[in-house]
Length: 192
Image 1 (cartoon, one colour):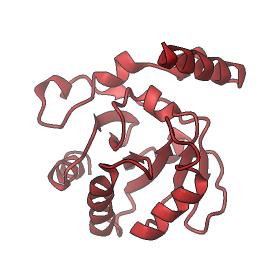
Image 2: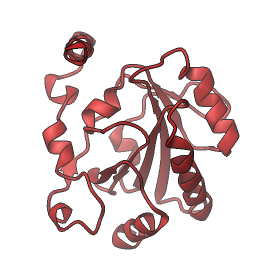
Image 3: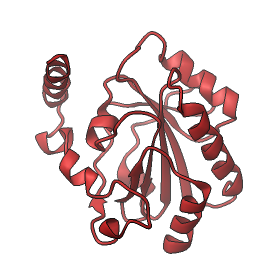
Image 4: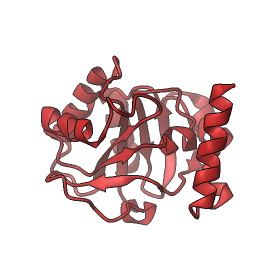
């Protein structure tokens, strides 16, 4: 019951804040592309990614960035790591993500993004903790604070860590708890 009221509250705030109802939550569409590349069900069911909204974006120097739009990512294979500082499984995801960023750091056609999506524990998962995670793992890519867990709702995430891969045309290719280095390599080979 509590989750229902939180959902209503967030949905109302998003719509009242100018978001289109079609942008708010589309779990059914997002979940069509939820598993790994090898899953035959996802080969022809890639869903179109939804526009990011309600996120505060920061660069490596903690300076606020303009709102990130999907058109800014067009033509790039985009890896998104969704996390909480207090999430027990997130350090494993960060280690994999760090390895991927190092492996592909010279590629201009690959974009990495990080999102701390706070579905609970707002005091323990604040903007300050976002920057602590950045420093700990040496992340230099854009990172966002999502205080209303919008990205979790948009992509039907089952929690954190959550990894999303968007293809160069903005389609959801991977939408799952983890991404392995092998899966990431397959996406790079498939699209680039």
